[in-house]
Image (cartoon, one colour):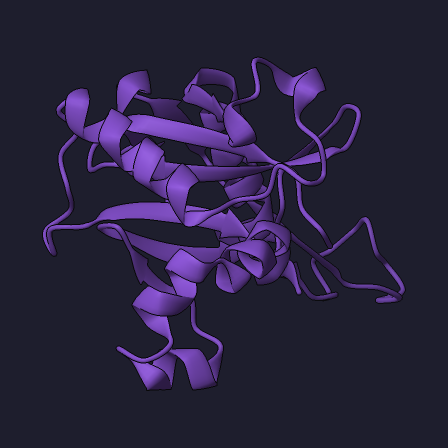
Length: 194
């Protein structure tokens, strides 16, 4: 449970940095956040638009020649029902489709997250991040572990717990995330039918 909490917390810190500093793309070609409705869902066309922006900005692909996307489950629901997604993924890689794995579309490899980043406006707006290599970085301070889970069991030398009545558990991490090039990460803000 502590490991999951630590991972989700660090994921939230990365998402906050991306949301604050990425290039924003509003679904449905809306002009701003307040115009995004629940019907302005994530589609293949939105992914193509983000890829076009990344390529025009000379974003680098990863070693496999693909960009990456982190997509909330609510937006993934709509994208998976989109005709471009279905045509590209249903018949080409049947195992992905059967196993519920997300797949690839328009040169973007998708990773689904249930740690959704949302904003409230006229509708709940979900953030999908599409990015190239070196768009953002994370830093672990030299000499410090990425994260540590610390368990303190009662013992004879523990004067704060003289009757050995309790143990404690917690985690800590020395961590920071930073957008390195805001033109290489696109935050698509979309509605969702879910």
